[in-house]
Length: 161
Image 1 (cartoon, rainbow, N blue to C red):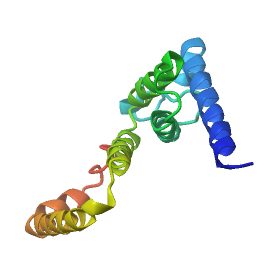
Image 2: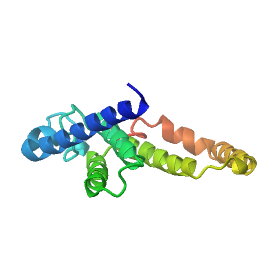
Image 3: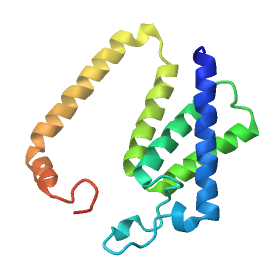
């Protein structure tokens, strides 16, 4: 099939999923938006999930959609394409999926940095990366008591027990 055609098919499927997610939120909000559930987490109320069963899967798929649309070099001047990029970002934010937002942001920054990559920067980048890793390791060691106390709490990661 070839890489370009495969990426085109993946992009088309992801755009179709995004459109279906928006349609579900608009036409069937009782399905597309988390509602109150007895015994459920009240923190989920209002988070968008589209036609997926839960917001985190929706967030992951939407983050991938955003990244593929953002890094598509052929369509940056097309208003419809820019609308899809904005739509995927809006939907991602509305999912409330903090993990997908965080990983998506890191992926965006790394992708933009990679586009600027020049092999002549390799030695400087390696020294900077090594210094950054040493600083991070020092910060973890210096703060280990706080980190371990936080991670031992049952509600530390998601805020839910």
